Image (cartoon, rainbow, N blue to C red; front, side):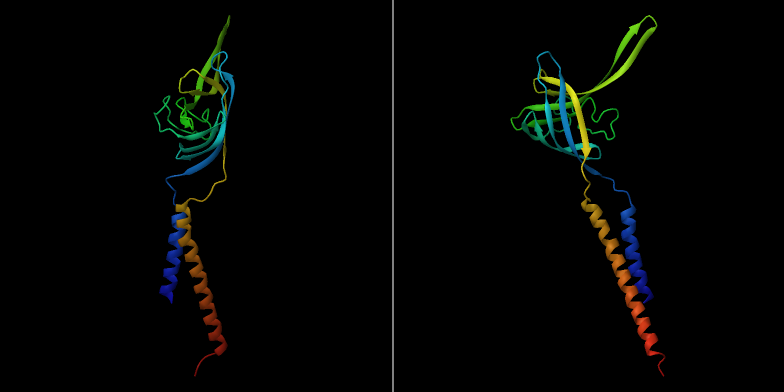
Length: 200
């Protein structure tokens, strides 16, 4: 009986330990929007788009939605267009993407890149110069002529348990269920023994 108790207890403890160990990979899902506010060139276009993206350890690995009213076909791998690295920085540092940004194609086959434009603007006077940082998001298409600057935002979607987390949770739940069942059985045996009293 004592050996059975130890086995069930160790099984439950093993499952709990697996739950407490850090998971090396982490997938996150976000809703994203881009709204251009200022064309890159006079008379240029204003881009807009929205959808969902998924990251694994801070790298965007899935992208969906629409851009300029056309469905997004898919994410381009890092280095495929405009020096993209497909990194997403959450929290923003100082922006959600890097100067390389992330690139994708729409269903018409046109490539796009959403990137961070980091810099500073200086104004000088008799007492010296004062520089203020300006951090903007930009979007550019395949011909590098039609681009704009605007606002890019991401909002975390509700997290869903990863399959590995569910798999690690199962031994813990099963172990504790077996432990509870064994304890109840042991208590019932003790109760019956006390009702019967000592045998002659």
